[in-house]
Length: 385
Image 1: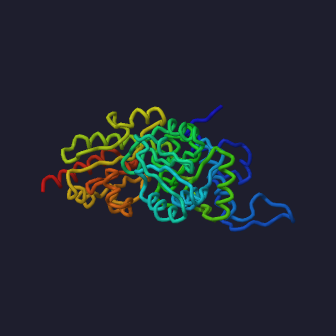
Image 2: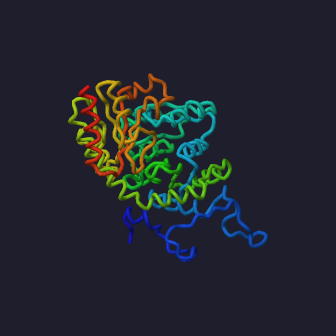
């Protein structure tokens, strides 16, 4: 019988090996760089940890199961995962990429991948005719949905149909929703990317990245690349992600509940000019999200009446922390202009809607009333000056 996603976060669907680790409930950390061979030509299944490690293998199996893929690769960070994925392409190849992406992805594409001879066309994938930008040398379409930080929602299934018609890969960064709320492979994607640092880890205590696929040809190529480039996730970090995933379901549900409450509260504030959260019925991508995901997540972006108001919020919050990153149990507030998108040229930021009064919030699992009380106190103090 198929297990629910919450159960899959805790129990890997396999029976073999249950007693191989002395019945340990928590999967062991195999902190070993190398492994002895029983004899010439024989192996325990593990030879050298750059190639594979039992703890890393376990977290890869769990993430592959959650995303309904045939394989997952665990890497040292989200950017390491995207960098490895880019090794699938060669000089002269062309990719269509979302215009509104995490700043680190834009930086990699513009300053590393272009230098390596790969060409990019950046478009608003959620509203433009993607098919009209496909060329003879187009090899992939790369999207985030929702995007970071403007929360644009792209129809994965429709985009996958376009990709398949033209024989190109569809790559989806699923970090914001996690496999608990969304499974792009089920909708036709070929590769799913996660910054495991975020919701999969969930505690702001480690870095990790994942690539998941359901295609055997892609799997074989990525496996060759990871052993060649050597950015596999270390055993202890693999264990931290395993531990984090066990509570993914309850964390996502609570964080989403809090995010909905904050989004509604922000809508009622005179100093807030725009609230961008897919869980709001007026969000342009709301209905698409209802079709392709099981939830709306806990990321939201909002704009204030002035730069000065935004900076004052960042200076005065205490329970809510002014910090980069997202997806942890703590609520974090980020200033994209100087943090996540600092390396993105100002004209591109502004074209994407990121202004100096834009704030992004990753809502955590604190008591919702405490978060609202803090925001109300901060807003009142600023407005009373």
